[in-house]
Length: 113
Length: 114
Image (cartoon, rainbow over all chains, first blue to last red; front, top):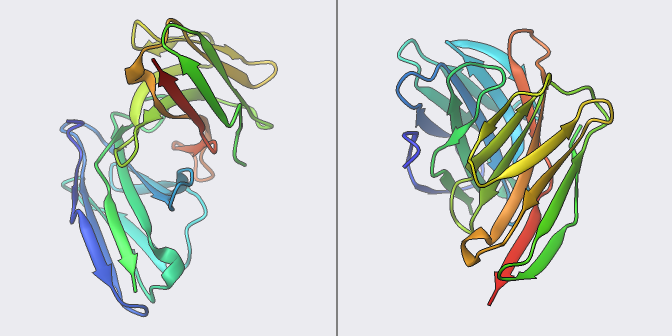
């Protein structure tokens, strides 16, 4: 158990809808990362937060947004969903923002129908 | 930019050795290695920092050539439990400063057979 909690485990929704994925980092970790993994694909970096502030951005679509709250949990919001957004979304946390191992949650599997 | 991993896949017999390579065209702060089993979350194996520091599991070894921006993961005396997909992640400083952008390669599928 990595100590990173992601909810929900599965989400099934229709195209055009909006969903929110939630992540609670390991106790003591200040940095949260979001990754998207499509079927049998690699891990695509979306965004990183450190202590509530956005610190690095990857190939995150404009329809996607994220934030990290004062209690350090993070939410990833996906809107105007398309079939291609179906994927496994991982959250990871680390102690600090640089040079620290990432600890991944079990992921949220999103299916857009 | 995504780091390049090689090979894409490798099949070993138990007890054999393997090397997985990772290269980047960018100056790196660190290189991470993770293993992911099918349907599970990636698990941290090792991090190699600029300047030579390493953190990771005792049974895993890796190298980081800072001049060439290349890293290699060495798997020796492989066991069935080593099977999975290995990802290298390359860390560069984030565009907003103070953070890092950890970009993963496409992965190397490793299968260990009896």
